[in-house]
Image 1 (cartoon, rainbow, N blue to C red):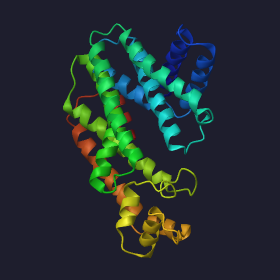
Image 2: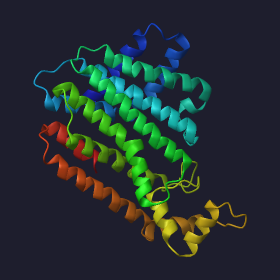
Image 3: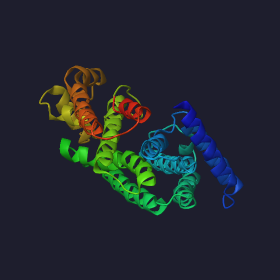
Length: 300
């Protein structure tokens, strides 16, 4: 997988360097942001590539360009998300106005890169990219409104925000190989995004700092569970969320309740529900061993 990361990274470098419409300042920021992204790997580009490889008989080298294009879109969304949430220390948060231009450039480059490939079904791939990107933006809007305060509405929100992007990457790989898409690939692709988001929600609560969802009065599955408990900690958190002037949030007691009161276990259980749903669907999909192993790693 490291070799695949390297190939996607190499194509990203070429795309950024060779785009004649990008000026020096914009290109420099693009390069720097891409380098930060490289540290966490190109999971969405790999999903696209592995699904293409699994369903094709003849490898078209342009698939690396498509994988890179998807990563440009994902990075643009990451940048915009961080600028909106204001809870990240990535370099793009230091110059939000300039960084927004970089994100916009990436969005345009993503669709144009796919359009300039030699794939027969590239227009369908672009349509998938646009449709699922809009679904994700709608989910992000719901997340920012912070109104998803029960299990069902929260799952629906992260299915749009995160599930749409992982499903998009899988489906683009499939459609470039076969000319069509399957509900099975869409479904487990969507579940992978939900699983990853729940994992992020759990991780957010492990440190009491600027990224902690509870301190930021955000809603997530473990917090929704905590707020449903009728005890002293849940009442103090409810008062804190309601901006009660007399609210006192005991960090130690709250952390203990999250860990030992069932909230984290509940979130892990929900993650596993979607893991087993995804695994059951994957059993009915013919995909090579490399792709299957990678998908199962993302479901853990």
